[in-house]
Length: 397
Image 1 (tube, rainbow, N blue to C red):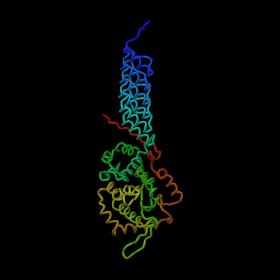
Image 2: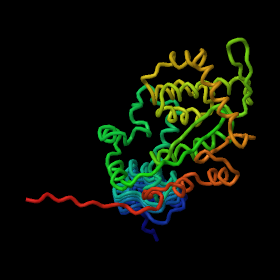
Image 3: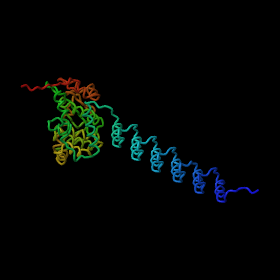
């Protein structure tokens, strides 16, 4: 009996299907469908509703990247965005999943911060980064001046903007007048200081520093203790600086010859600072502070003079340092140092109200500001623990 057989074309399609290892064909059972299924299964993926090759390729790209889910559109662009985000070590994207958002988060995370601002902007990250890297949580009001001094020191030592610095804003002149305070941005602080300062003034505490320009201990005390105290206490302090120290003096004809403990460079530094004290009076201490804070005081001298005393020409200062005036000034410093009672045996040598003792020296090194506050006989300012004075003003009819 003859058996009923399928048409030859169908047999060929089934035959092609079976060797490939596929059990079912699509609705049409067409060879094209078989090839698409073959490509999909050989890749280890399932087809979408349309079973299109394009869908397979998109799924293939997504899964080969190590991701389980695609966005609703399953587009290649979405896959790339997710791939960039996950390869950066982040689990979540912003609602848009945009590459820009990923980069912002990446910058924030790489900076070591866990949270961004509301916008997640790079600017917010930088602001947080600056705050965190500073390591300061709170800054008391009495430390503002010290912070300003530190910033000024860094600015000068780095050499940035020295030519443009307005020397009229040196700390020593902040509260010299209302105009100066307004120009330097410290008007409120100066007004508060003047209102709270005692009207019943007393004699200032006299502090003398006998030192050398390259002596490490002298430089440390001058920059970290003496200068900040003078800025904070102002006219409660009467300061005398005598650069000479352990130098030796001899006479050669009509000139004095000086031999310094740390060599010729120190003699040159001593001479420049002595001439500054003679030529610039109250502004000299700011220049000396600037020099002593620098790694090389001599190299920093010219920039410090330009920053704090632009009216003093470098040529005039050098004429003093190399001429008869400087020679005479240094001789006077030698006489002052040799006249100390008791005789100085080291530097820095500190005198308080004209007296020196190991106890006073130790107290000055440990905390000059509280020492001056303790010795001041007038009404204590707030920084010394005194009470603030508040005034009420009325205009009557």
